Image (cartoon, rainbow, N blue to C red; front, side, top):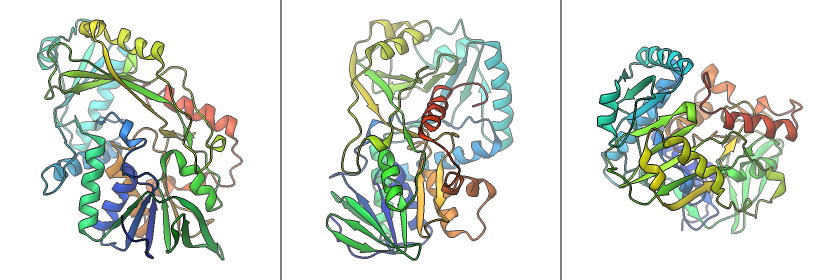
Length: 409
């Protein structure tokens, strides 16, 4: 455990986002950084529940380029030295079942090619050859991105930590933040159950507790935890680790190999959320029991395309509370209300796959005297004093979740 001595920058939260921010700050030459995590180990809460798929196909050139940057980061970390994210660049198949989705694919291809991302359309035989057991007859189009892939979220966090620590960043686990001291509207220190740490900047990357940490700094932000689930089967069919990821947006499904089993998840049509006001900073979010009807619906929706899923037993169910925002955009950047307080939350289920890019956004917002208009638009000031309310925030955040794979999302 690192010594809790003073630091220029304190990061609160040791999931994929907090570790990515530490890594990006270290890359930018800021080594007087301390990351604090309340759990005994890093990446043991929401990050541990992530599926690990990494896709680059997006609806705009800028978003494609950001995703490509993340993939380049993961590939670089995989080359080592040191711990790697277990990055597998296996490609991805995206299947259209409707004419409207085919039209969307054409627009996506234009965005991808505008960004320099290689994509192509496959015929049924080529897709079935890439995924044994796939029945592609109902597919109206199949989009192939050879440079997509998947990784292991915990391994990614460890790779970030290793590179950041080598540049002087310190990590302290098993430490709870209890307060943030503010003098003349400016952060002066972080209070913990092991004493105070003087600092100039606090970065809130606390996941499902990001609202609580923001409240310590005097901010009330609509950071809404929304339930998400997926399952991993027992070994099934001819699945093996080198097969591509699979997305069926018309059925709101995603999947990938998990060794020789299937990892399968989806976006529920009726999302379930909680208010962070209903649990304290010292408490955990409510426990989630597996919702077997929802999980069964995922399997049933995939069965016409991959019949072996009907006979596949479930080995393990993963579930958690990723945080969503009412407008579907990250909350990243400094607050003008509390100087020295910086947000890195509300990741809308991109906390692992988008961690490299989000970390880059934080560094740009914090260190660049002229951050881009896009990065400026992500700041917490858009919600402070805007008159939002929790009923609307939950409804809109749930809608972001429910429409995750909708056309134009």
